[in-house]
Length: 303
Length: 51
Image (cartoon, each protein chain N blue to C red):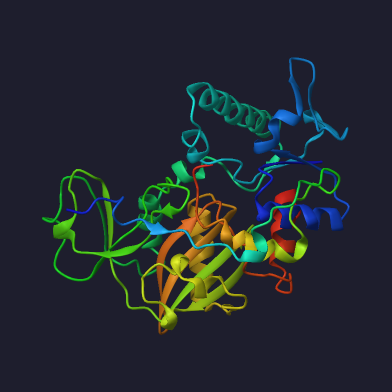
Protein backbone atom coordinates (compact mmCIF):
# COMPACT_ATOMS: atom_id res chain seq x y z
CA UNK A 1 0.00 0.00 0.00
CA UNK A 2 1.22 3.48 -0.96
CA UNK A 3 0.35 6.67 0.86
CA UNK A 4 0.51 9.58 -1.55
CA UNK A 5 0.82 12.91 0.28
CA UNK A 6 0.09 15.72 -2.17
CA UNK A 7 -2.56 18.29 -3.06
CA UNK A 8 -5.53 17.86 -5.34
CA UNK A 9 -4.64 20.54 -7.92
CA UNK A 10 -1.31 19.01 -8.88
CA UNK A 11 -1.62 17.42 -12.34
CA UNK A 12 1.69 15.62 -11.87
CA UNK A 13 0.08 13.87 -8.92
CA UNK A 14 -2.80 12.99 -11.24
CA UNK A 15 -0.36 11.45 -13.71
CA UNK A 16 1.02 9.24 -10.95
CA UNK A 17 -2.45 8.39 -9.64
CA UNK A 18 -3.70 7.46 -13.11
CA UNK A 19 -0.77 5.11 -13.64
CA UNK A 20 -1.34 3.53 -10.23
CA UNK A 21 -5.01 3.04 -11.17
CA UNK A 22 -3.99 1.43 -14.46
CA UNK A 23 -1.84 -1.02 -12.52
CA UNK A 24 -4.57 -1.58 -9.90
CA UNK A 25 -1.90 -0.75 -7.35
CA UNK A 26 -3.43 0.05 -3.93
CA UNK A 27 -2.85 3.62 -2.85
CA UNK A 28 -4.41 6.33 -0.74
CA UNK A 29 -4.08 9.95 -1.82
CA UNK A 30 -4.05 12.47 1.02
CA UNK A 31 -4.58 15.96 -0.38
CA UNK A 32 -3.45 18.83 1.82
CA UNK A 33 -5.97 21.25 0.36
CA UNK A 34 -8.88 18.88 1.05
CA UNK A 35 -7.72 17.86 4.50
CA UNK A 36 -10.89 19.15 6.18
CA UNK A 37 -12.75 16.30 4.45
CA UNK A 38 -10.55 13.50 5.78
CA UNK A 39 -10.75 11.90 9.20
CA UNK A 40 -7.31 11.39 10.71
CA UNK A 41 -6.72 9.54 13.96
CA UNK A 42 -3.15 8.97 15.13
CA UNK A 43 -2.56 7.26 18.45
CA UNK A 44 -0.39 4.80 20.35
CA UNK A 45 -2.27 1.73 19.14
CA UNK A 46 -3.68 2.66 15.74
CA UNK A 47 -3.22 5.27 13.09
CA UNK A 48 -5.89 5.65 10.44
CA UNK A 49 -6.80 8.10 7.71
CA UNK A 50 -10.21 7.94 6.02
CA UNK A 51 -11.54 9.77 2.97
CA UNK A 52 -15.16 10.98 2.69
CA UNK A 53 -16.03 8.15 0.29
CA UNK A 54 -15.12 5.52 2.88
CA UNK A 55 -11.68 4.66 1.55
CA UNK A 56 -9.37 4.25 4.53
CA UNK A 57 -5.77 3.41 5.26
CA UNK A 58 -3.98 2.10 8.34
CA UNK A 59 -0.47 3.52 8.52
CA UNK A 60 0.95 0.18 9.65
CA UNK A 61 -0.06 -1.24 6.22
CA UNK A 62 1.93 1.37 4.28
CA UNK A 63 5.05 0.09 2.50
CA UNK A 64 5.84 3.23 0.53
CA UNK A 65 5.12 6.94 0.89
CA UNK A 66 5.32 9.56 -1.85
CA UNK A 67 5.78 13.19 -0.85
CA UNK A 68 4.34 15.04 -3.85
CA UNK A 69 4.74 18.73 -3.03
CA UNK A 70 1.70 18.99 -0.76
CA UNK A 71 2.31 22.66 0.02
CA UNK A 72 4.49 25.73 -0.37
CA UNK A 73 5.28 28.48 2.11
CA UNK A 74 3.03 30.74 0.08
CA UNK A 75 0.02 28.59 1.02
CA UNK A 76 0.30 29.97 4.54
CA UNK A 77 1.27 33.53 3.72
CA UNK A 78 -1.54 33.98 1.19
CA UNK A 79 -4.10 33.51 3.97
CA UNK A 80 -5.58 36.66 5.47
CA UNK A 81 -6.05 35.90 9.15
CA UNK A 82 -3.62 34.67 11.79
CA UNK A 83 -6.16 32.00 12.70
CA UNK A 84 -6.28 30.65 9.15
CA UNK A 85 -2.49 30.73 8.89
CA UNK A 86 -2.17 28.82 12.15
CA UNK A 87 -4.77 26.28 11.02
CA UNK A 88 -2.83 25.73 7.79
CA UNK A 89 0.44 25.38 9.71
CA UNK A 90 -1.15 22.63 11.80
CA UNK A 91 -2.17 20.79 8.63
CA UNK A 92 1.33 21.06 7.20
CA UNK A 93 2.77 19.81 10.50
CA UNK A 94 0.31 16.90 10.50
CA UNK A 95 1.53 15.78 7.08
CA UNK A 96 5.14 15.88 8.27
CA UNK A 97 4.17 13.86 11.36
CA UNK A 98 2.54 11.18 9.19
CA UNK A 99 5.51 11.11 6.83
CA UNK A 100 8.03 10.75 9.64
CA UNK A 101 6.07 7.90 11.24
CA UNK A 102 6.09 6.02 7.94
CA UNK A 103 9.79 6.54 7.29
CA UNK A 104 10.56 5.45 10.85
CA UNK A 105 8.61 2.24 10.30
CA UNK A 106 10.65 1.51 7.16
CA UNK A 107 8.37 2.71 4.37
CA UNK A 108 10.19 3.45 1.10
CA UNK A 109 10.27 7.11 0.10
CA UNK A 110 11.53 8.14 -3.34
CA UNK A 111 11.50 11.85 -2.53
CA UNK A 112 12.91 13.23 0.70
CA UNK A 113 10.98 16.40 1.61
CA UNK A 114 14.08 17.67 3.40
CA UNK A 115 16.39 17.15 0.41
CA UNK A 116 16.33 20.81 -0.55
CA UNK A 117 17.85 21.72 2.79
CA UNK A 118 20.09 18.67 2.99
CA UNK A 119 21.53 19.17 -0.50
CA UNK A 120 21.28 22.88 -1.31
CA UNK A 121 22.36 24.50 -4.55
CA UNK A 122 25.77 25.51 -3.25
CA UNK A 123 26.44 21.96 -2.05
CA UNK A 124 25.23 20.63 -5.41
CA UNK A 125 27.56 22.84 -7.43
CA UNK A 126 30.54 22.10 -5.21
CA UNK A 127 29.94 18.38 -5.72
CA UNK A 128 29.12 18.65 -9.42
CA UNK A 129 32.44 20.27 -10.31
CA UNK A 130 34.04 16.82 -9.89
CA UNK A 131 32.08 15.58 -12.91
CA UNK A 132 30.95 18.55 -15.01
CA UNK A 133 31.73 22.04 -16.14
CA UNK A 134 29.97 24.43 -13.75
CA UNK A 135 29.74 28.08 -14.84
CA UNK A 136 31.45 30.42 -12.38
CA UNK A 137 29.07 31.23 -9.56
CA UNK A 138 28.93 33.31 -6.40
CA UNK A 139 26.47 33.45 -3.51
CA UNK A 140 27.09 36.79 -1.86
CA UNK A 141 25.94 38.91 1.02
CA UNK A 142 27.51 42.37 1.31
CA UNK A 143 30.19 41.42 -1.20
CA UNK A 144 28.90 43.04 -4.37
CA UNK A 145 30.52 43.96 -6.66
CA UNK A 146 33.98 43.42 -5.16
CA UNK A 147 33.96 39.65 -5.77
CA UNK A 148 32.39 39.71 -9.21
CA UNK A 149 34.58 40.49 -12.18
CA UNK A 150 33.34 42.19 -15.31
CA UNK A 151 31.34 40.14 -17.75
CA UNK A 152 27.87 38.86 -18.40
CA UNK A 153 26.08 37.69 -15.27
CA UNK A 154 22.67 36.35 -14.43
CA UNK A 155 20.89 36.47 -11.10
CA UNK A 156 19.60 33.02 -10.25
CA UNK A 157 16.93 31.69 -7.95
CA UNK A 158 18.29 30.85 -4.52
CA UNK A 159 14.95 30.98 -2.71
CA UNK A 160 11.92 29.79 -4.66
CA UNK A 161 9.60 31.66 -2.34
CA UNK A 162 6.78 32.92 -4.59
CA UNK A 163 6.59 36.70 -4.67
CA UNK A 164 2.88 36.66 -5.55
CA UNK A 165 0.36 34.46 -7.31
CA UNK A 166 1.42 35.93 -10.67
CA UNK A 167 5.16 36.53 -10.27
CA UNK A 168 8.03 34.24 -9.41
CA UNK A 169 11.78 34.56 -9.01
CA UNK A 170 13.58 33.72 -12.23
CA UNK A 171 16.99 33.77 -13.88
CA UNK A 172 17.60 37.22 -15.37
CA UNK A 173 20.57 39.14 -16.76
CA UNK A 174 21.95 41.67 -14.31
CA UNK A 175 24.69 44.23 -13.84
CA UNK A 176 26.13 43.32 -10.41
CA UNK A 177 26.98 46.95 -9.73
CA UNK A 178 23.30 47.84 -9.81
CA UNK A 179 22.11 45.23 -7.30
CA UNK A 180 20.97 46.12 -3.80
CA UNK A 181 23.67 44.69 -1.55
CA UNK A 182 21.31 44.35 1.40
CA UNK A 183 19.95 41.19 -0.26
CA UNK A 184 21.64 37.81 -0.65
CA UNK A 185 22.41 37.22 -4.33
CA UNK A 186 23.14 34.08 -6.34
CA UNK A 187 25.05 35.15 -9.44
CA UNK A 188 26.35 32.97 -12.24
CA UNK A 189 28.33 33.80 -15.35
CA UNK A 190 25.97 33.60 -18.32
CA UNK A 191 26.61 30.79 -20.78
CA UNK A 192 25.60 31.37 -24.39
CA UNK A 193 24.20 27.87 -24.80
CA UNK A 194 22.60 26.06 -27.71
CA UNK A 195 20.09 24.21 -25.59
CA UNK A 196 18.65 23.57 -22.16
CA UNK A 197 18.91 19.94 -21.16
CA UNK A 198 16.95 18.40 -18.34
CA UNK A 199 17.46 14.84 -17.12
CA UNK A 200 14.99 13.02 -14.90
CA UNK A 201 16.91 10.59 -12.71
CA UNK A 202 14.85 7.96 -10.95
CA UNK A 203 16.58 5.15 -9.04
CA UNK A 204 19.38 4.93 -11.59
CA UNK A 205 17.30 5.31 -14.75
CA UNK A 206 17.71 8.49 -16.78
CA UNK A 207 15.39 10.28 -19.21
CA UNK A 208 16.99 13.19 -21.03
CA UNK A 209 15.29 16.02 -22.93
CA UNK A 210 16.53 19.09 -24.73
CA UNK A 211 14.97 22.46 -25.50
CA UNK A 212 16.40 24.55 -28.37
CA UNK A 213 17.25 27.98 -26.96
CA UNK A 214 17.30 29.74 -30.32
CA UNK A 215 13.71 30.93 -29.79
CA UNK A 216 14.47 32.47 -26.38
CA UNK A 217 15.11 36.14 -25.76
CA UNK A 218 15.66 35.70 -22.01
CA UNK A 219 17.90 33.32 -20.08
CA UNK A 220 15.09 31.52 -18.22
CA UNK A 221 13.13 29.10 -20.42
CA UNK A 222 10.28 28.93 -17.90
CA UNK A 223 9.05 32.40 -18.82
CA UNK A 224 8.81 31.59 -22.52
CA UNK A 225 5.50 30.42 -23.91
CA UNK A 226 7.47 28.49 -26.53
CA UNK A 227 8.84 26.17 -23.87
CA UNK A 228 5.32 25.14 -22.86
CA UNK A 229 4.27 24.06 -26.34
CA UNK A 230 3.80 20.39 -26.88
CA UNK A 231 6.80 18.60 -28.27
CA UNK A 232 9.31 21.42 -27.78
CA UNK A 233 11.35 19.26 -25.42
CA UNK A 234 13.00 16.56 -27.55
CA UNK A 235 14.26 13.26 -26.27
CA UNK A 236 18.04 13.02 -26.49
CA UNK A 237 20.64 10.37 -25.84
CA UNK A 238 23.19 11.47 -23.27
CA UNK A 239 26.91 10.89 -23.83
CA UNK A 240 28.14 8.06 -21.59
CA UNK A 241 30.45 10.45 -19.77
CA UNK A 242 27.48 12.64 -18.77
CA UNK A 243 25.42 9.63 -17.68
CA UNK A 244 28.30 8.39 -15.56
CA UNK A 245 28.73 11.84 -14.05
CA UNK A 246 25.06 12.07 -13.13
CA UNK A 247 25.11 8.62 -11.57
CA UNK A 248 28.17 9.47 -9.49
CA UNK A 249 26.79 12.85 -8.43
CA UNK A 250 23.44 11.40 -7.33
CA UNK A 251 25.27 8.72 -5.37
CA UNK A 252 27.50 11.34 -3.72
CA UNK A 253 24.42 13.35 -2.71
CA UNK A 254 22.38 10.29 -1.64
CA UNK A 255 19.52 11.20 -3.99
CA UNK A 256 17.25 8.55 -5.56
CA UNK A 257 15.29 11.11 -7.58
CA UNK A 258 16.00 14.46 -9.16
CA UNK A 259 15.58 16.53 -12.30
CA UNK A 260 19.02 17.71 -13.27
CA UNK A 261 19.35 20.84 -15.40
CA UNK A 262 22.22 21.57 -17.76
CA UNK A 263 23.06 24.04 -20.48
CA UNK A 264 24.56 22.44 -23.58
CA UNK A 265 27.07 24.30 -25.72
CA UNK A 266 28.19 22.04 -28.54
CA UNK A 267 29.35 18.84 -26.85
CA UNK A 268 29.83 20.45 -23.44
CA UNK A 269 27.21 19.99 -20.72
CA UNK A 270 27.32 22.75 -18.09
CA UNK A 271 25.75 21.68 -14.79
CA UNK A 272 23.18 24.08 -13.34
CA UNK A 273 21.23 22.38 -10.56
CA UNK A 274 19.27 19.41 -9.30
CA UNK A 275 15.58 19.90 -8.57
CA UNK A 276 15.16 17.34 -5.81
CA UNK A 277 11.38 17.25 -6.20
CA UNK A 278 11.15 18.73 -9.69
CA UNK A 279 8.13 18.52 -11.98
CA UNK A 280 8.49 16.18 -14.95
CA UNK A 281 5.06 15.24 -16.30
CA UNK A 282 5.15 17.55 -19.34
CA UNK A 283 8.27 15.87 -20.71
CA UNK A 284 6.66 12.57 -21.70
CA UNK A 285 3.06 13.53 -22.40
CA UNK A 286 1.88 10.20 -23.78
CA UNK A 287 4.20 7.97 -21.78
CA UNK A 288 6.02 6.67 -24.86
CA UNK A 289 9.46 7.24 -23.32
CA UNK A 290 8.62 5.19 -20.25
CA UNK A 291 9.19 8.13 -17.91
CA UNK A 292 5.81 7.91 -16.17
CA UNK A 293 6.17 4.18 -15.67
CA UNK A 294 9.71 4.57 -14.31
CA UNK A 295 8.68 7.26 -11.83
CA UNK A 296 5.77 5.18 -10.60
CA UNK A 297 8.10 2.18 -10.27
CA UNK A 298 10.35 4.42 -8.19
CA UNK A 299 7.44 5.70 -6.11
CA UNK A 300 6.34 2.21 -5.09
CA UNK A 301 9.91 0.99 -4.60
CA UNK A 302 9.93 -1.40 -7.54
CA UNK A 303 13.46 -1.55 -8.95
CA UNK B 1 19.52 49.66 -7.11
CA UNK B 2 17.61 46.54 -8.06
CA UNK B 3 16.13 44.12 -5.54
CA UNK B 4 15.06 40.52 -6.23
CA UNK B 5 11.47 41.75 -6.30
CA UNK B 6 12.30 44.08 -9.18
CA UNK B 7 13.62 41.10 -11.14
CA UNK B 8 10.59 38.81 -10.70
CA UNK B 9 9.11 37.41 -13.87
CA UNK B 10 5.41 36.85 -14.63
CA UNK B 11 4.18 33.30 -14.35
CA UNK B 12 3.06 32.03 -17.80
CA UNK B 13 -0.68 32.11 -18.25
CA UNK B 14 -2.45 28.81 -18.58
CA UNK B 15 -4.09 27.67 -21.78
CA UNK B 16 -7.71 28.83 -21.87
CA UNK B 17 -9.02 25.29 -22.14
CA UNK B 18 -7.41 24.50 -18.79
CA UNK B 19 -8.95 27.39 -16.90
CA UNK B 20 -12.07 25.50 -15.84
CA UNK B 21 -11.09 23.25 -12.97
CA UNK B 22 -13.13 20.08 -12.55
CA UNK B 23 -14.07 18.70 -9.14
CA UNK B 24 -11.97 16.11 -7.39
CA UNK B 25 -12.84 12.50 -8.20
CA UNK B 26 -12.65 10.65 -4.89
CA UNK B 27 -13.02 7.21 -6.49
CA UNK B 28 -10.16 7.54 -8.99
CA UNK B 29 -8.24 9.95 -6.75
CA UNK B 30 -7.63 12.36 -9.63
CA UNK B 31 -8.97 15.78 -10.60
CA UNK B 32 -8.01 16.63 -14.17
CA UNK B 33 -9.03 14.88 -17.39
CA UNK B 34 -6.09 12.75 -18.44
CA UNK B 35 -5.48 14.61 -21.73
CA UNK B 36 -4.69 17.85 -19.92
CA UNK B 37 -2.27 16.34 -17.42
CA UNK B 38 0.93 17.20 -19.17
CA UNK B 39 0.12 20.77 -20.16
CA UNK B 40 -1.41 21.48 -16.81
CA UNK B 41 1.59 19.99 -15.08
CA UNK B 42 3.81 22.50 -16.79
CA UNK B 43 1.51 25.32 -15.82
CA UNK B 44 2.20 24.65 -12.14
CA UNK B 45 5.44 26.50 -12.90
CA UNK B 46 8.60 24.82 -11.95
CA UNK B 47 10.02 24.83 -9.40
CA UNK B 48 8.80 25.08 -5.86
CA UNK B 49 10.95 23.01 -3.65
CA UNK B 50 9.84 24.27 -0.28
CA UNK B 51 6.98 21.82 0.17
